[in-house]
Image (cartoon, rainbow, N blue to C red):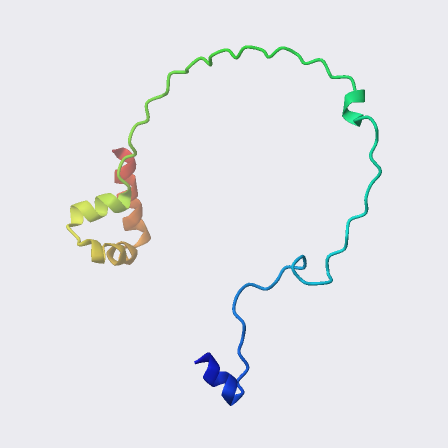
Length: 111
């Protein structure tokens, strides 16, 4: 297939990753040599005194307060008592007047 394309004159595209600048010929510049020092500068510095690590004290466990489960909302009571299917529950709740919704919410807070 490639040979046929070459005969016809179709330019073949090369696949693969583009070359990085280090692979391109003539791009690489030789590094300049740095003069080496006779001594290692790290050896000249005095080492800092390290403090001994303090032992960690185990944390006191606080008794966790028992969480009570949240009671049903007015919407939940409305759906449960009304026997409404879940598909129609949202539309039925929105169709209620504000005073009817408040009465269901009041019942929920009483529980």
